[in-house]
Length: 117
Image 1 (cartoon, helix red, strand yellow):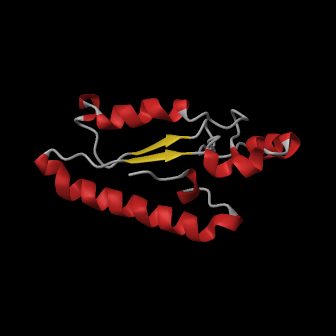
Image 2: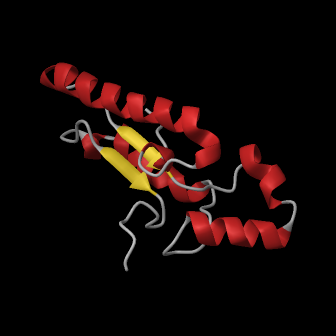
């Protein structure tokens, strides 16, 4: 399943999206419990901000994009490139994940970590 950091850190302008991703994560956990005994591993891959076609309009103004990256991806401070999410996806689809069930793999550059004070 493809989740999102928004299931943990919902952005105000993405409330419905975040709620649906939270529900999806719950579904992933429940399905993982049901299907793991049959060696069907169900997991959730949750990326943070990724420089994709979907958010191309957000990258049109370089200054705005820098601010978005800094606020959305701390502590790394930049968006991921799509290729940086591929390895995690390949892991979950490979035999290397044959004993991984119900995981929410956060590929966020650390943005999912609790904020330090």
